[in-house]
Image (cartoon, rainbow, N blue to C red; front, side, top):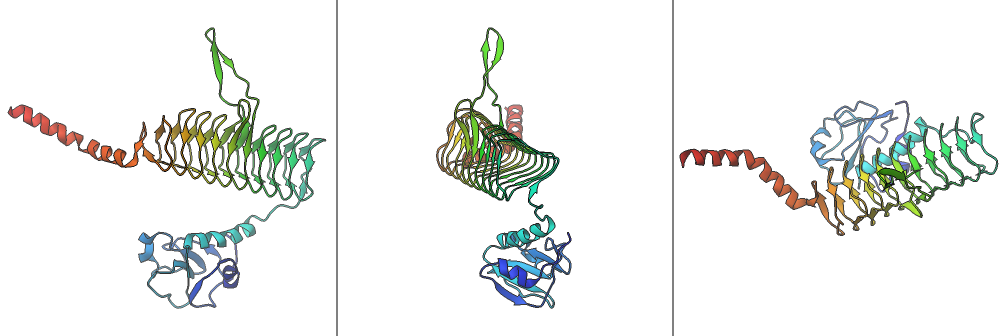
Length: 343
């Protein structure tokens, strides 16, 4: 990491802080854990189990919760904030802009923008991109290399498409959407009818609509609908390697972790949280605020506010009790065997 950040620059991005120690410390040149930080580094206490490392840390600047008990060493500064992890995120945004400055505006000479595409003036389109006729690219959009935007697709203002993204025909992205490397939006849904012993392909004529402030992780695939639309709601965050089938509707502010598989026509209401590698059978409804643990198998509708675990999924408390009992089974069978020997 090659940066240089002053204490004054840091304080500008942090609201409502309490400063302790050396207010002349800096400049800062890196971010590290409490344990591995060296002089010139910024560290933070985000998990209480690491609080014992704070006073021995060599970091020049430490972000701490307001209730932390302890004082900085010489040549060290403590900044007490409401949320240390979020405070570090705000600092890292500044660092990110310096490490990865935005490319210059304009369209790279190796890219193809077809006649009929509507591209705003304040757009960056990197090398080897293809923008088809009828596509609309809004202001402030940043498109990295090897991106394809299909015919009549729409990309909202300030959206970022990273390397290798495929946004297929007629699909729509809202404002400030982030599609990470390798994302495919609008691929054909998986649908076949069995006719006379053959699997006959069902055309998927719909599209995908992704609302404002959604982020999609690398190599995630979102299938277009059979007729109308597959939709991802505002503020939802989806991790890498997620498969979202045709006609799926995901509500606002949902969180979906890596390697989840969502079959066709599943509907998530708002604020659903899904752990990694969970799977959903088709045509189900998952209620508002439901939580699905990692590797859960969902085969029935899920009530709002539920917390499910296991395959097939059960309530989290019941699944935990069964897991405890399973660990006791070998001892239980041994006791039965011993009883049979003495009977």
